[in-house]
Length: 298
Image (spheres, rainbow, N blue to C red):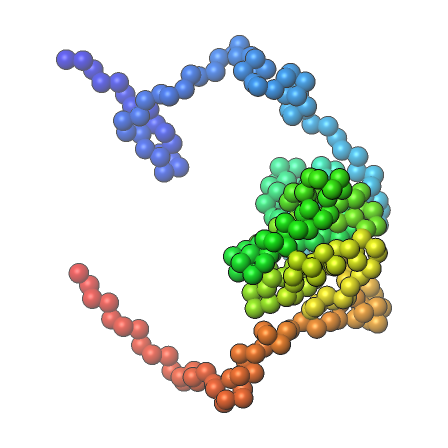
């Protein structure tokens, strides 16, 4: 009678099983040559595993003051990470490795903790953006109504060489320079009643066509700022990032000029207006909530 080999544990403390398992890998010994096993060159491996201090000089004393102000708004300092990443983007036009280290130092976090957040949310860009960020909704309804055609046409129209269409988050022109535009796909922009829609620096341009979208980006490249359909007056992307970081003009008139604008469209309010015209109302809440039904025990 042969003895049965003791099964290996696959991590029962994390919900795994330790029954019927056999070893499927070779344990690494002390003499394992990582470089020989890697498809990358030794220099590439060293570049990936060697931490090189980034130059944080771009974040001057004024940026540090703003970061400290952000931290003071929260009971826990790490809660300021999201707005601080927007602050970093307002300075550099993207979240660079220096930006990650700056946030980590200010919030007493590791670079990995900051990078995990910066790479999770699509509003944080890892490559420098243009003066304007054009986001075309290509989710289901907008795509069917023409969003896919708008995106494809803009990708071709904004091509710097005229032959290679822009890809997601590619930039036409020199990032940050006047007239430069970064183009991106966007998931649902919550304006299905006005589709197809696009945004420029997160301001809405509703009921777009291929022709109107091309006219819009051409105006942006000429330095013009066409009024959005809804929302605040158009400005550049870095200025919007500073606002998302929580910093606005102190003067009331300047503040109002930057943020005031129409926020609701006729189409959005049509249902509410129809209900008001016809006297439709929702049922009133009862004074006493009804008893929950009895659940039969088996």
